[in-house]
Amino acid sequence: MNFIVTPLAIFLLSCLSLSLFGCGEKESENQSKVFALGSEITLETELPAVLTKELTPEEKSKLASEIMPPAPKNEPTAEEKFLRLKKEADAGNAIAQNGLGVLYFTGAAISKDTAGKIMNNDPATAAAWFHRSALQGNAEAQLNLGLMYANGEGGLAKDAAKAVEFFQKAAAQGNADAQNNIAVMYLTGEGVPKSTSKAVEFFQKAAAQGNADAQANLNAMK
Image (tube, rainbow, N blue to C red; front, top):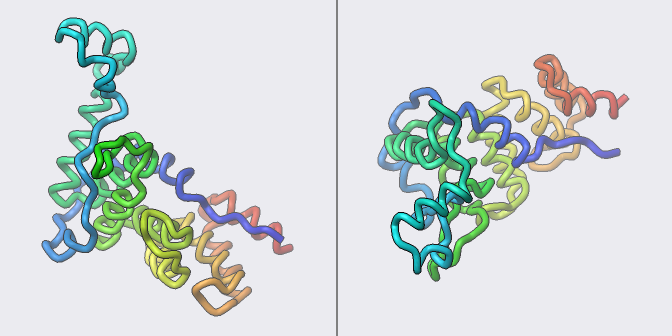
């Protein structure tokens, strides 16, 4: 019998719009040093140097306008959105930190390795930003970090107990995806003592909020 865990990428995409708004408390100096952050980023909308090294500034601008569609009228560009998010995240905004983690995880913000090679995405830097946000109590970041521990992503060793720890923190704040995931952990006995009654309890909490995965899991148990 297979049970559905809310996967990281799907949730991240759904929460990205939330990441651009709100004001979080500034993180402490100690929190900001938990993980070392990755190298400077480039945006996926930047033109590769191979296309522009022989071009004049005017030719670069023309090529960029042909390759990159402009932002909708009165809407910020991708670069403007990123820079705003980065500024807020650096200042300690927990919601922005989670959102920045989303960009690194999905590849919307692309890092370079130490040799300067562009990476399609950067789970390690994503994990760093999720951790900063999670330490400030952001439920979405706690869920995302729990999933990275559950899957052993972003340079984090696979650790079911750590995954449970962050799922529980998010679930306690009413996050339905975390409630569904902690229920699966109880059902399978990963990171916690196996408990069908606890699994049902958390599946029901998530399903009551309209979580389709939790409802499907309850149906599978029947």
